[in-house]
Length: 442
Ligand code: HEC
Ligand code: HEC
Image (tube, rainbow, N blue to C red; front, side, top):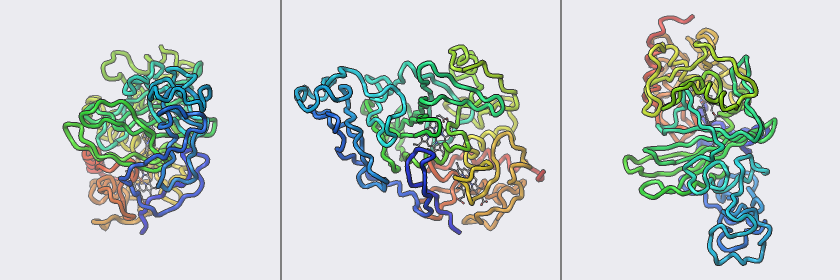
């Protein structure tokens, strides 16, 4: 039985992903992606400006060189002007490099060349350049009802719409459809310390691209910058002052596996996830955003049955609504953590793999999991071959795989197999309780 992870070779641009190779367990290499200083063509000559390379990841598997982006200088605008003269050189790395003065490179929009994202988060325009831990004023923060488990990280989320463009809410699916040029932002924190910022960008009608930024200053230091992670995965071990965290940055291909076309690319924003009163607010997020004018038309409110409950207590998001049933909480969890891959027609991600349906709105019968035979075999430590056995989590491959440890080998059965290394104990308990409470298959 081959449990090895699929791994797309290619780029984060969804339609461009070509070849899928099996094998290749993850190799979350702990070595840093040292970026070689290949940028600069565009006149980053002056002084220290050249440090802000477009990061071609030396030593990664990195298909095709991530070439210099014509100089993505750390500061000082867009090159050109001062060009090779180097006059600004000795002034140091300040904003003196050229034509741009204190301006920054980006306007929080997708890069012209998806292989050359802006190197430093502070320069993307998505955050305050003087304090990148703060979002740009254009960013609109939001919360979701049912978060993705990411090894216990706290998260903040926001989106930035291109000027004059609006979100369209699909009346049938409740999906929030973002206009081309949108940038979605998610920060990952432990004990108030940033470890990662992810930017997910709507490049054109056909494609999105995802980038991960790795923060400096974990531990006691002030956090001043995050730099883009290369094509491959990366890892950092740091101490927040309260705990040591081993953190794994997904690869750009990993982004595309979860944020796939069938799931609709952006994964959080839809009616079921967004209908909530955000922490510290009094008005429903739906109404707040509508009042801000982000929609092209006032969306129909979701019915109670469509709204996802928070699956379990979260230090960040509080408690599930009092009325939420065990079934709703469990299904909400599976929706947020599994359904982007496990839903019908997800051929690219799943083919020729199982095609059961873990979406919230799908009945247990139609989910095709109850007493259903696995297609990928048993898992170590169990002889069961059923995805879900009523009343018996320990015989249910679905539960066993959620409870499986991360391993670095080709035999890993853990679900999800990417972007998490720590078992979600509360999630495992919830799904265990849910299976225990199911008495018979519909
Ligand atoms: C294991 C699946 C998975 C992987 C891998 C993954 N994401 Fe996500 N991501 C999600 C889910 C599910 C959500 C929505 C739930 C939430 O916000 O917690 C989400 C939310 C986001 C958001 C907020 C907007 C949205 O689409 O909901 C951003 C931004 C984001 N991810 C960026 C990235 C980037 C960039 C990468 C790769 C570096 C990545 N993600 C990898 C599953 C994944
Ligand atoms: C990034 C996509 C992705 C996500 C997210 C994901 N899975 Fe999977 N899942 C797969 C793939 C691919 C396979 C087949 C490869 C394998 O056996 O590991 C699989 C296999 C499985 C199987 C075995 C099915 C069989 O017929 O043998 C189960 C059960 C499962 N997943 C449950 C889950 C659960 C529960 C979650 C959420 C907690 C989840 N998965 C999240 C991609 C995903």
